[in-house]
Amino acid sequence: MNSTAPDRNGSLAGRQAVVTGAGRGIGRAIALGLAQAGAQVIAVARTRSDIDEVVQLAGGNIIGWCADVTTDAFYQRLEALPALDILVTNAGTNRPLRIENVDEASLDAMVALNIRAVFRTSQSGVRVMLRNRQRGSIVHISSQMGHVGAPSRTVYCMTKHAVEGLSKAMAVELGPSGIRVNSVAPTFIETELTRSMLEEPEFRKSVLDSIPLGRLGRPDDVVGAVLFLASDAAGMISGDSLKVDGGWTAR
Image 1 (tube, rainbow, N blue to C red):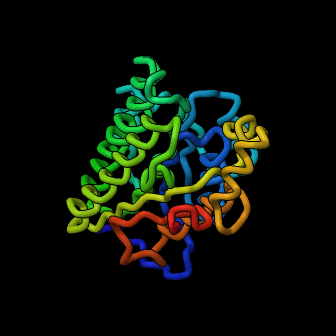
Image 2 (image 1 turned 60 degrees about the vertical axis):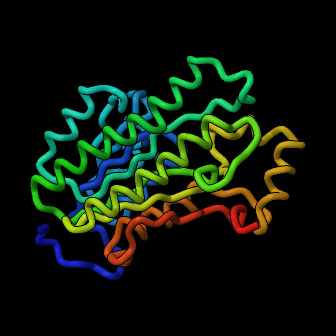
């Protein structure tokens, strides 16, 4: 087992972390948050300029990998790591379409990134943890749509429900090895990706009307949940989904 003593105060000093989809938005905020908590972070994204920005913003504790998380080359690189304590699978995509309008390209793209890449990334990360007999924490960034349904999101909901199922199955299988697996399921978070959608007044109102707290989520709201689940403060939490949704799914 990893010799790092449990720290119930939430410090991640000395931990090695990998965050996928870390170039922008939620992923960038998570990578920076983990680094600020003391972890050595590998931030993964496809766009070199985004990764360079993250590394510069961190001022240390972050190494950038420009990589495509759907490729064997990325999984091989991940498995070559000498150690891994924290894995955050954040890379994902959405193409809102009514079911009758979903084309094969959109279906394949969402399944490939939201399900297959999450599984393959997890598999490679687990191999590193098991090889080194490390306790570890894996956090899948899911969505409130992994717990409910919504119009124009049949494929997205399907993929996020799959992530929730993967989290539970991994938690059961890997618990005896000291590896905890959980998900974080955010509501609509204001990022570059969602900004244009949320600028539409009718849609924005419908979203806010569905959130009892009456506000949209911010990347930092997700960061707090990830830091908790990654830390020893959550040492007895596995197979769960922490919904950062302002009460959306409580209705």
